[in-house]
Image 1 (cartoon, protein in one colour):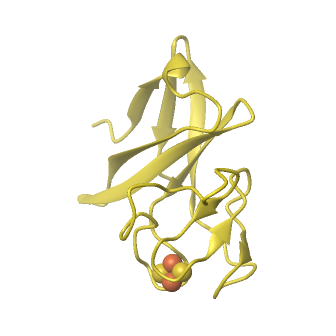
Image 2: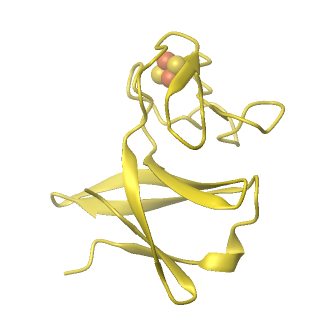
Length: 112
Ligand code: FES
């Protein structure tokens, strides 16, 4: 039973994000991937501050300058490569990281 999500490796350009869902423990888990400087990172789409989706109140996962991940609910901002909150109500807290592996032309995102 595959709970992984496969993305076309070339489909996510630097600075872009994509949202999707993963199955974990029989439940649908909102998630996203971000291409940061050519490296793709993936996280559960749940803010460590209060558990909201980062894009709950916005059409983007990014800060206004596009350099950081941002939570639209109370304004936490996160480093895209580590998922660590840099500023806002939860400094030092982390987004939950998902596994990203390469399989030919695809990136395989998996829940831990
Ligand atoms: S829920 Fe994200 S900053 Fe509060």
